[in-house]
Amino acid sequence: MRTEPVSVIDMNHTEPYSTDMNSVDAAHFRSVLSSYPTGVVVVCADSPRGPVGMSCNSFTAVSLSPPLIAVCAADTSTTWPGIREAGRFCVSVLASDSAEICAQFARKGADRFAGVDVRPRSHGPAIGNAAAWLDCELYDEIRAGDHTIALGRVVALERREEAAPLVFWASKYGTVASLPVEELMMTTPSTRYRMPVGFGPAPGPRQKADGTEWTAEQTGTMRQEFVTLDFLGRAEQLERLLPPGFRLRGEPVVSVQLGFFRDLYWLAGRGYGVLHPLIPVTYEGRTETIEGNYMPVIWEGLADAVVTGRDELGFPKLAADFADLDVDLEHGSVTGTASWLGFEFFSAALAGLTEVRDARPPAGAPMITFKYVPRTGRHGAGGADIAHVTTGAAAANGGGQAAGKNPAGGYRRWEGAGELTWHHAKFEQLPTTFHVVNGLADLDVVEYRGAAYFQAALPGHVISGDGQRIVEPAEDLRHAAF
Ligand SMILES: Cc1cc2nc3c(=O)[nH]c(=O)nc-3n(C[C@H](O)[C@H](O)[C@H](O)COP(=O)(O)O)c2cc1C
Image 1 (cartoon, rainbow, N blue to C red):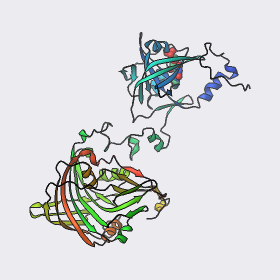
Image 2 (image 1 turned 30 degrees about the vertical axis):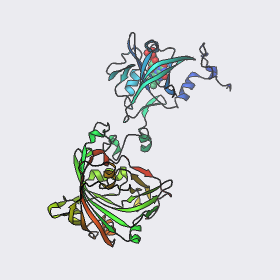
Image 3 (image 1 turned 90 degrees about the horizontal axis):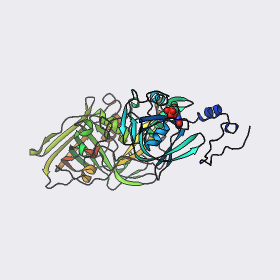
Image 4 (image 1 turned 90 degrees about the vertical axis):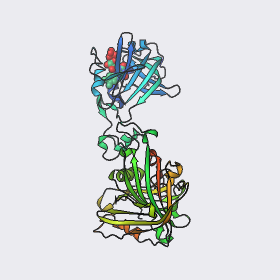
């Protein structure tokens, strides 16, 4: 076998390479190169003789500035001369369900456009359900052996994010579905999936039913109605609730918030009840230190909010039932409760409430939560899949942060005194969450530090949780005991 390398430097050969391929057998060449997986594009143009198009897997990105792509067209192609004459073309990156379209656009003598969803674009016909489209001007052509390297200057491009690509490998069509799910998701980085993933991207705070994103205007106005009760606790008791990396910040004053979010755009106008304590902390992560309020648990009254918020935001959410707050402002009192499985585990009573004139929402500190997803396995063996902190500037903390950042239209606030009770629970009453309620019920209230009732109207998007992000822990906590 000859070892002399085939020259690939001189692309401007005017003569085709000899067909003996320097003794590299053509079939062998094809077969070995078929081990290289590619996507497939269909290149279409409005030629002087009508629409033309051909399948190509020789597509590649070439240059960022100017934005250039390339396809290699065989000298034998009868389609390419029409595209050349048009001087412009549209590249459709085929989606995973388009193997038949690919075959059709390679078939000699066939009406390649028959039965295909074709849409006109500025630079030529486009395959309707493609994964991406690139509108190109023909930039240059370089002779290379028995092919022409055609360079296209991209003038416009678009991507259908939820579409998986068609893959061509070993002369067969396939998809990337056999890749690990995380890798599949990384191909569509701005598309959200959650369990169950087989049904495609998930709608939710970011997406409308048709997959497009909500604009701030479309999210409308949401309403909040909350009571907040502050009490001075004991530092040593509160410290026990903190995961590694957290320490108490300032006086150990716990703020407990109970209330409702209403008119939420991402729930098609529905709302739900919320209950959570906040503990003032400093968190020291691997690269950043955050002063904020740690939320050790949050109960919510709607499964959709619980599930999505645990998965996406990393909030430690549990389910609860909330009766409407019993509000009697004439007599300055508000009471509220939370229960689960018929067991009332929390009650709050505020009295002596008077309205604060020209009230402004307090500027709260950012909320910090600890996201923990246990590994699947017997009795929790194997630790966690995920154990890290998440934080966000505008989150569902009952007003402080969100309201502080977004001066509310209808903010009204009444202040007075109040008391709260966490009712100790037995296993039989709250089989999977009694330890959480009891952990809070065991906290001493050294003294109450005031109570408030507020109503607010906020831009709908402030509790979408889109600002939530990961803070890397200083140490790997996936095998930690807390
Ligand atoms: C998966 C696949 C990839 C192809 N890639 C190319 C390519 O990169 N360049 C090319 O000239 N032809 C390629 N072809 C062949 C063309 O699609 C088409 O069959 C060929 O151009 C002959 O038709 P024509 O005379 O109408 O051009 C490919 C075909 C298939 C099925």
